Image (cartoon, rainbow, N blue to C red; front, side, top):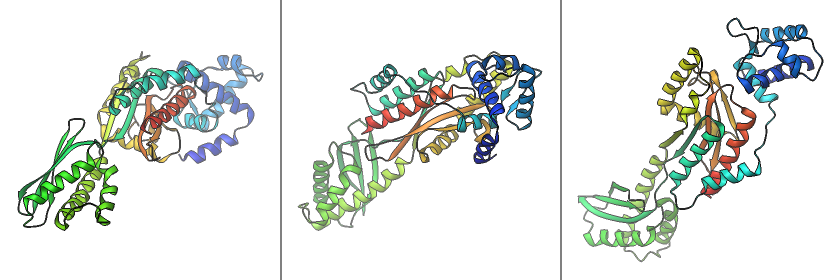
Length: 356
């Protein structure tokens, strides 16, 4: 069902059924158990007898917002009901100053690689939420330590790229036929002077401007090798940047409070879902297009249609404001949305500040 029509449905609820529904969902999210009329009569700020509450619950069930599991007298929200609650009734909490400081300090520990920082952020958000932590990001281009052009065949040269992180990549580029070996040596020396300690992306613009303005002190053939080589290398690096890294931490939290065979099967199905990393990455990528936190509930997405799970995720951006990844949590549909939403939001902003 379209979320807009669900929101409209929430607006059509009068005060009494709206209050009953809101308190029922809050009680369910707090303890995970079906909520009965007697429990609600003690929670509601308005005076309603258990019999009156049962009548309202019956109306909400006919609207598709509640259902009774098994033979229980209590009710729990459907996925449709949870979406209505999250979109129109959820009162988002906040995280305290101590927790904010703990998040910032644990993620920002100095002397670590960015991958270690992202892994720590994922582990930390898992611990705070008692859910599985998720993070997807583009593979980061390494700063370069050394570049070398080596002739390998007529019109072809091998470019060896050695990163400061120890990585080595070999790429083949086209070069002019009959190019003298001295031109490749000169191109190697020039590129190394400009690229060392920088990425291709950050240095390419400056190098190309020097060549175009004839300030590079290179002869015509060598300048062509450098320009064509940079164009080819940048195009290939752009393709690699589309590859995604998925970090998952704290899946053991998904086994907490599993006391029924149906719950155990749900978690097994969920673990199978997580193993299909490409599907999980595609789902998280949907959060890149939003502004702030996105919530995906149960069968609203095809990936978790059988596992009764929700994802709360938010994008984070680099220093240029470009969204480069998504961080979030995965848990059962009855997770504590009011607490988890601000945790995810704040953590995404901390990671973004570190990238800046």
